[in-house]
Image 1 (cartoon, rainbow, N blue to C red):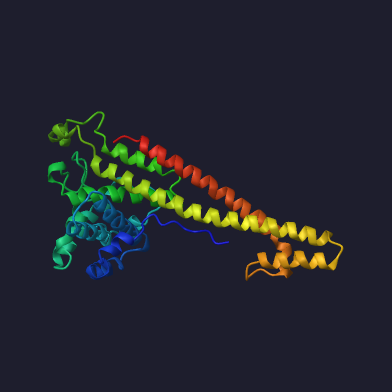
Image 2 (cartoon, rainbow, N blue to C red; image 1 turned 60 degrees about the horizontal axis):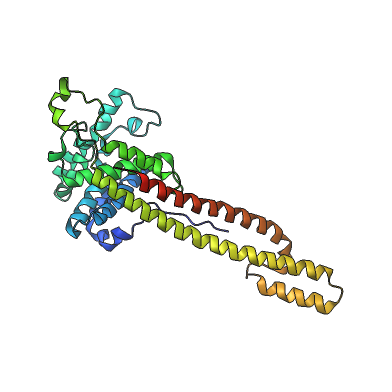
Length: 318
């Protein structure tokens, strides 16, 4: 009984743009990254592509933005593994080193003629609309649209990966965090280095339109997951009904006194068996029946919770 797996980042959108040829060189660059960072880059690119589609960006910009997203963390090639792969929280000093991946990635792209057009991905994906981001502390008017899109995709995947979601159940809690990113600071700091940001105090870190669009992407993903899970539940239910009938025939066969009747129920059982099942292992049906019922109940509960997630997401306000 194989359980279907759901992919948070379906690559169908990427394939529709025929990016395999376009990005062969860029993808080769990712091969030098550690497995976790490479997977993160792929996820962020897939989500960025889909965000661009839902934002109705043209094909050219979508391709460009997707490649920028693939390369957004390329600067982590130059971050010491002890910092990049540290499982616990980084110290202030270590975080300052980590932050340099933006400028290091930008410089790497600028030195390579094939990567230069996509240098915006590494440079801008940690900038914030209210000026509290890095490396330059830019505000909304100076942050390219591609940087704003990649920031949202990056934040989302970072949380999803950290929490190791197997399903979209509970995903509304992640989206709540991103909603908070769109809100202005409650008590903006007008002193010292942030004094020049007074007029940006009404802005949050992330673009609310892009975050709102992410909701649509996620809701559609949940709908797809419900469809996939429902198909699996339906197949389980068919087997459960089949096992019930086999058990019924088996009981009647054991109670039958005439060979004619015994053979009748035996033939009925054979018709219900799948190729990998035999009369010899029919005694395992009871065990399989319980396993399938348990799997059915588990998946049915997931579907119910997924519908609740959609309701929760629709209640969110950006």
